[in-house]
Length: 134
Image 1 (spheres, rainbow, N blue to C red):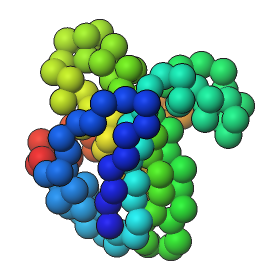
Image 2 (cartoon, rainbow, N blue to C red):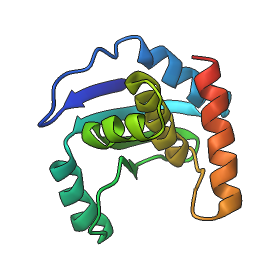
Image 3 (cartoon, rainbow, N blue to C red):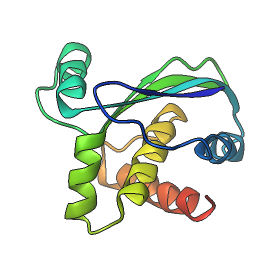
Image 4 (spheres, rainbow, N blue to C red):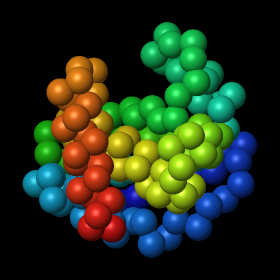
């Protein structure tokens, strides 16, 4: 099950994204548990970043993993403010950048990391692939 929540930000029409995100999970040979996307503003996500990760800076996405074995579950918090800024910075449409961040958070729950240059390259390749099959 995939839920979309909006905290301190306007709603975004995302009803058609559930099937795509499920397809990503299944493509990675996993099953879907409970997945929540929480769209929020910079301040809300900054507080989460400080409280849970001890990082005092703005970010576009934070994923909290509750997965058990091959069943993917978690909360993916996304700052709509950061997505808007990044879409301008990278000269991409807002929805494209939002989808990239959505799949990026899901990839973290699926076990991918972006701490090293090589890991980042793999994640970007995965993001590009899953964006292409949307």
